Length: 239
Image (cartoon, rainbow, N blue to C red; front, top):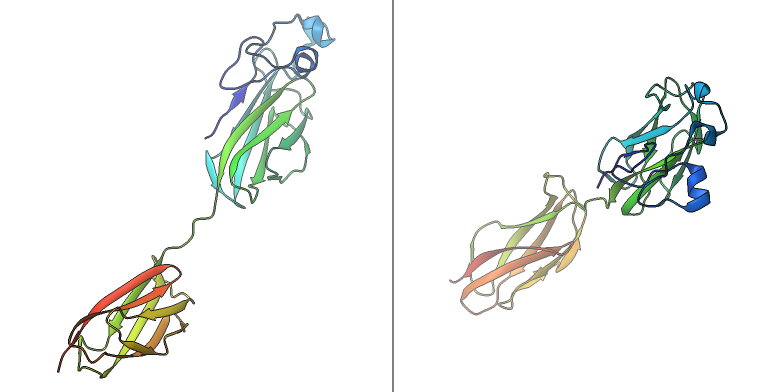
């Protein structure tokens, strides 16, 4: 979930944004109290360029752990003009994401842009940004690194073997993109066949074993298990 915050002289939009002084006096509530220009400690005709509104926008609503995204802060005065150059910004994070600019920065033309590297903890990250007079918070989701899906393919050199006879079996272990994986393969036969070797590591995604059929005739499911994934094929056991 991505939120972008903007503080107004009165009212709220999207999420809580209020003046720092108001937060200290009364806490951020459902609305912010309208104050006269004198409340900021400067005459009304000197409010041009003084930070009065702050908008913080992340470039994405979700990002993978440890990956970067762009964060933009827009600071304007009460007239909607860019705040004075050099308006300071301070940052704080909930989950520990890294701000490229550090915890302090300043605006130019009312804008500041930085890179945020997501923390290694999945969850909803909240980036709080403050100027001397206002603050805002933007949120985005940090998601866990997706694990590649392992695909196991069992390929006997032929689909028939005599009772008690031997048959070479090739097992291929790859991810969904076709990249060979190094995994431990374990073989299994529900009809009582045996394997030599019965388990082992793949070499560039390939594991080779010899299947020895039981003496009973019928169909056997030759099965390979790797990284919790199963691949199997049938072999006819008959003279």
